[in-house]
Length: 271
Image 1 (tube, helix red, strand yellow):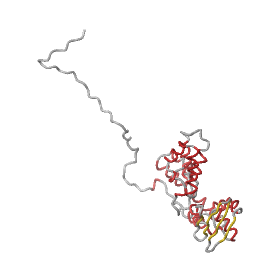
Image 2 (image 1 turned 90 degrees about the vertical axis):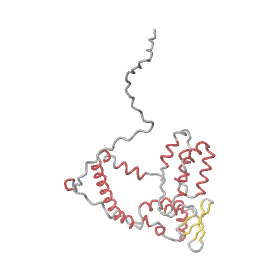
Image 3 (image 1 turned 120 degrees about the vertical axis):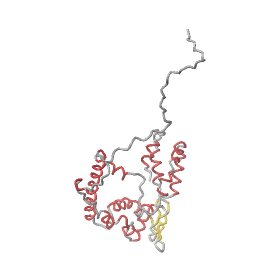
Image 4 (image 1 turned 45 degrees about the horizontal axis):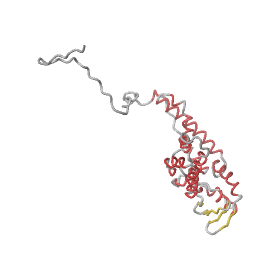
């Protein structure tokens, strides 16, 4: 996935004076439905046409939530996880190839062991991430008005907008539940009114058992270089420098003095 943070920074190069650039682009990225996406795109077009054209060149359908493939239960629109990993291996990257990989391996072992302990200390059906998200959503869920239907269907109203919630299919017409894997504020409001436990409707990706399973297996310790298998192959050295793009410069051939023919008239010297 593309990182919206970097897209915003690139857009600022040509639109530095546009104060609403950042919030409008993030609104497009964080949309949960195609209707919300189209509304935010039109709002951007009405704000500034040149900025709109540059955003369209970045293909927002490739980094906006409504067009994510369902099933991963990941709503990230940035690469903060990658940036976090890169920051932890800064010292390792200054080393040679093998010492660098060994340092990263030991860091990974410590990280897995630390999270394994934290996962087994956690009480509850779901992870802390879900608990924090539901706590934030409850502020809006308490303000929702619910009209129950049959077969797990509810009509939820919030701020004069109505949403269709299906607790059997784990869907909401706002699109957030399907993408994130966690009940949205509308679904949560319906569950509160119906006396349902929201934790039972969260994706299994966020279960405590899955958390413990993920960090159950560790990387195996490695003995020192003295006992490593000898391959007999030459040492790995730096690759040759690649050819630079562009036309190749031809080597100038040495010029030898020209020998004139027998019947060739001598060149007159200029006075």
